[in-house]
Length: 334
Ligand code: HEM
Ligand code: MG
Image 1: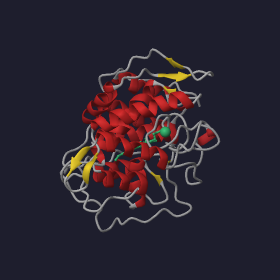
Image 2: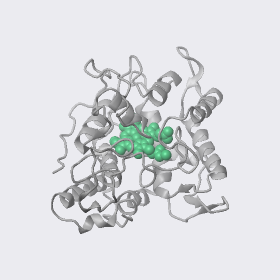
Image 3: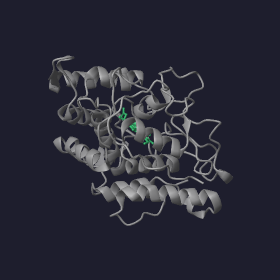
Image 4: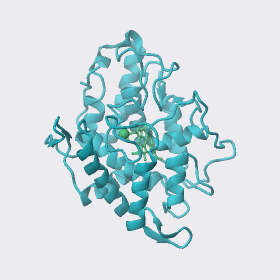
């Protein structure tokens, strides 16, 4: 069964990568996907270089390397495993489908276990450096989108004596970029889906960028550092992890501050490309319900034995981060 790895005892800053984890570009059969954080871990062998990992491996790697808080890492990884992995054999592809991740017993979640790069459940619209699935490449780094981010750093970034004027990424840059990404998707993606879970996760990903990619030596995210993670999926030289664990509270606060500059309502485009808000309240329990109920197949609850044991473990790992919300019951489509 899936077993919770031990909680890290040391959450101070350390240099990353260590000598045992050099960068190696992925080979033709190594899977990579929409998450620059996980891709970078795999490119340095902190996750298996083939891009297929267990719950335990992902929690250990994200907590150790980025100093992501243990409960936050557990909740995200649990959601990924339930949504797009094989919770029976405890394997998740960080890219598209893999022969190493067979379908679940009885093919209860379809004929393939699809991986984090599959559109829906976890991967969704209004990403920063990946295009919406209906209009482009939702898996690989897109230089044109990244250049839009860089031009906002030119306009709104802070100055650095080392990397130059307007070369530091700040909250304001993310506020403007997230809003631009939304308005662009709203205009061009007739199939835009921006329900509350995806909306809040997407602001969380902007907050991840500021909080986990910044260099732990000074807490500053410069353009060269950000480029190293997003474009090269490689740790920058002289990089250290942040000096304290990055918790859901810290990330959530930044995500809300990014959101509040230009609030948008959860919703979806209709066939005419008109954005139709869905009137869901925007709060932590709505996010939790989306993760643990809407996006987890209901059929999991019909299972017994090891699969059900692992599913319950993973649902509990999500609930731990949202303990004030009533426990959700999966009701997603298969
Ligand atoms: C995006 C999964 C940890 C940074 C994503 C996406 C997935 C994902 C599926 C794509 C969502 C989308 O944009 O459509 C996970 C899982 C994690 C994890 C299962 C397990 C703990 C991390 C960590 C970092 C990170 C530790 C930072 C160090 C990001 C960023 C994006 C992203 C910045 C947005 C990329 C973009 O919009 O261009 N993640 N992630 N993630 N993730 Fe992760
Ligand atoms: Mg996406």
